[in-house]
Image 1 (cartoon, rainbow, N blue to C red):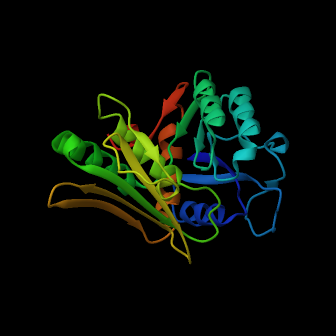
Image 2 (spheres, helix red, strand yellow):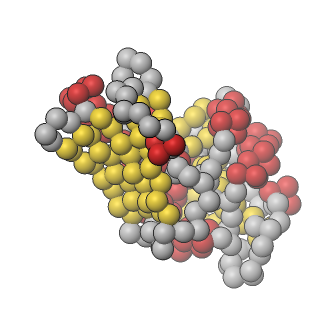
Image 3 (cartoon, rainbow, N blue to C red):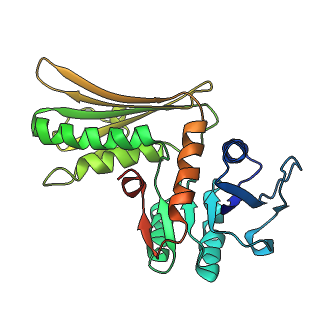
Length: 250
């Protein structure tokens, strides 16, 4: 039985995680962390990780980037694997995660969906086949409550694509502010916010007289919760290091 501490326990994703765990018999949530406890959880909820007294095999984080330092300190102090599923980290915070993984096992990805990670593999294969002959544009769509833009998943896709080229691509977020032709060394990234869209990501490869589109559509938040719980079971007992979905799906 894998014992889990869930940060962001009373948020939307926290409640979905609870539902997924309740339906399984190989894991349990022994404690939660949330400053806004609505007293709906079946386990104790604390206002900080420092207050948690229960022992656990792994922490699943679906909270807020502002809590990163506290989560990393907990992982280091207790040598507890961390599944970091929060989005919206800046470059400095990403470096902190990478540095912390030298002393603590950390599972970090911009998207916990198995389908999205398959999309990454397909995009890399498309680049290998199409080369520099196709312009690349990424379009991401999310609900109107999402704060960060572009999404971490869109940046993950762009980074994976860029790595396939000899020279890194530059990312273009604001093409309307300049009047000039599109260059070959760029990837356009476009963000749409509206309604209750869970998550839509498309990669357009636009060539001469033909277009190819790879896309993924998330229909509920449960796909991310299932991925996070699977990652938690995978991380139990792991040695320090950085892990991601590529290890999980091998």
